[in-house]
Amino acid sequence: MRNHPRIAIAIAVSLLLLGILYVWRRSSSVVEVNSGYRMVMGTFSRVVVIARGEKTAQRCIEAAFEVQDRIESLMSDYQDDSELSKVNREAATRPVAVSEMTFEVLQKAVYFNKLSDGAFDVTVGPLVDLWRKAGEAGEPPTEEALAQARRRVGSDKLILDEKNRTVRFAVEGMRLDLGAIGKGYAADKSMEAMKKHGAIGGMAAIAGDIRCFGRPPRGQEYWRIGLQDPNVAPNDLGPSKPLLVLALTNEGVSTSGDYRRFVKIQGPKVSHIVDPHTGKGASKLASDTIIAPDATLSDALSTAVNVLGLEKGLALIERLPATAAILIPAEPGASLVYSRGARAFVVTTQEALGLPRE
Ligand code: AMP
Ligand code: MG
Image (cartoon, rainbow, N blue to C red; front, top):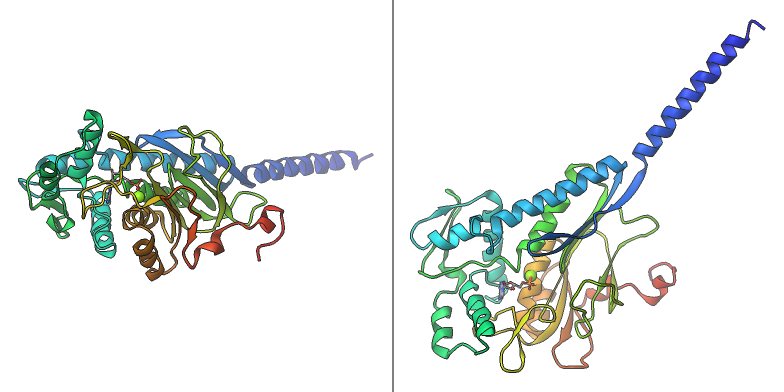
């Protein structure tokens, strides 16, 4: 009889401990949270986080979108008060000081310009503007207008002062356009932010620029990224059967092409990607997808390869370590072209059936 209070206390303590254990397990068990789509940089952005505990996962998602919003407010050329717009307004008259992030992107952009023999060029702004206006007017630009715009394009005319972190234009009328690198950079920075807030895995997808890292979703060995068929791509983001599926671990992947964004001037589509050497719309590839160690690189390279076309584009990718490409030539019915390392990333039918990778 005298033992009863002791037994009751022991049971109560055990129950309490079990309760604590249950709450602790719940809050520290690995969860997967998908943010759903949000609008960033004028397009759709989505983040997936793998973390211990719901709260940590939510913090990671908010941190990722915060950094994306910050990058947009610095590098958007649609916002008049962005840092980039200020540079575009003032850098022809004086050196303009910029943030670490903008400067980092510009330094990388100049490096990618050299790497791609000038195919990637963030100074293409005057040409992009010219073609946008031509699309609105329904008339192609005159040769004279093209020549004039081309005189204001060229990364050699972009003066970056590392010590003072300033940007200066050598020629009046220059205009920077970070549309081909900003989203990949933002995906990379989102990953850093998620890691900092405790993510053990994650993915940031901003339109066609994706970065993934760490532990993939439950039950999967890899991050699976579907590649859309440019010939049947819908104009919305509704589900469509992917052309193929990529299996990634810690990479950036980007797709460039004219199937979503282009202008139509008296007939054929004119891509939103401009060949800086000719001043005209890139037309050699329907689309190209690049896998690289990070998304800043995959973003810049996908635009560069779209300009370079099949042979030169493949040659560039084969030269670079840990980089792969899947190209779709512009001719209707053309089959996919893979760089040497690309097939290793493609999910085989065997895997789709749940069997191990070969
Ligand atoms: P992306 O979708 O990453 O290939 O980027 C395309 C966007 O980058 C275009 O909409 C332009 O704003 C800009 N752009 C166009 N041509 C080039 C080029 N040759 N190099 C760098 N940026 C470009
Ligand atoms: Mg790009």
